[in-house]
Image (cartoon, rainbow, N blue to C red; front, side):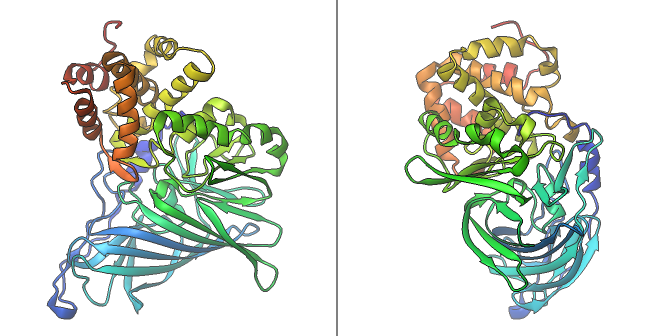
Length: 466
């Protein structure tokens, strides 16, 4: 994500604390006695986000949207595996009205409490069993709004909508396990009035005209994706197709009023990816691209998987490099908890510095010196944002990048490049924590780097100039 102020994130975290309390367990088929899965995963910054007791493998989302009324009709089919004997389990869902719920085809009882939707299947689900939950729902999605005025979730526009979800906005348009530690593949089917374009992550596999003239597009995301990286864009878009890295399809799109002005930079996506592959290793996904919206809907760019979203005013080369770097660092290698956000933003910021060094002839050390001099970057350690309100503050980005540059100067360019590429390879399509990174860097460097981490990653205040 491009850097932004999110002073109201703490309020969002508080709003996620509502629970559905279902007491006890029951004995299901085969004598299994289950208990309810946890409502919330105790994330250090968002303790009630996500849910326990199961692991999602796939989301099948079938959506119909009417921009005139703002109404969204959806069915979410969630394929998951129980990680305990389950008598009930929760899904995160904000607003919207649930019409029906089933588990393995049988009607399931459901209950709403705040942003928690609790499903109780007819029979308990034994640990290790794969099951399929389906939820049919409807309503006008309401975005989550922070105190600073920034919004996330399903953002309505004059002729459509744009959906973005960091850190929790995806719960406004589909039920799910909305913590980044539970990644899944996706199929999304989107039906719209004729004349409107519908775009999402991954590869478009079908387009068809429905009775009455509506148009349906189908999108497939083959690689695991955290739900906050899911996106939908509805409106009047102009698209362009290309190929990157010899075989990766690239689809870029821009709303009609900003299409001409963004076309040249959208055309640079294959070249930027080719340059980043040289530094970060193989591109981790089977599709690539970018979405550019008119200004006024979004106040920031976001690295939505395979197809980052940019407001036109933020669509510049530096931001494009940043969001494309997230495809490796953040999207493929995904944070284990929101406290590890510097692993996303520090890496993507350092990717900007590396790009400038190699292709614009501005040494990374120059960026380091500028960041070192800025007081805002020393408000807290990058690996320890104190509250959810600080999720997107300058230390996460700039001081996070300074950690990496200090590591580079400590171990040398050859070893640093090995760490950068190896990190992306070792945790490809997985989740990782700050402790995972520090241990991995030390294993590659062959030395204890505790002094570096203590000062740059966890230390309070500005150190002596290195």
